[in-house]
Image 1 (cartoon, helix red, strand yellow):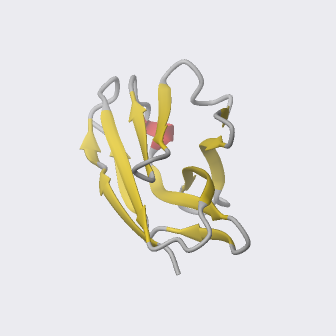
Image 2 (cartoon, rainbow, N blue to C red; image 1 turned 30 degrees about the horizontal axis):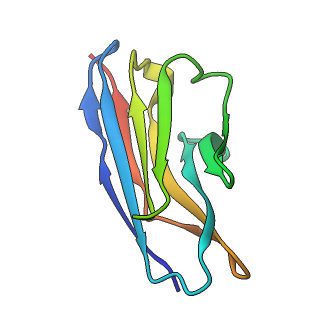
Length: 116
């Protein structure tokens, strides 16, 4: 089973920036999509941004123009650069990967809090 290691997150003031990174290892058949979802208290998990083969990016309208996703296929890493953060971006952010023949896997989540 694929292992996911997330890093980044934390507390930031409105207008600030954070970077989230996720590294995947142990995939047997390869990964064809990586990205990030988030879940705020009392709400359902929602898409933030995903990069799927062959480099197709999809993101939530709420983050367009502020968040940038990048993926390194050779290293199986995905990075989310978050700029101009708003209080409504506060959530637990989960790394997502889709493995060929095995489906979706999720990271343990990292807290992002925008306050101040």
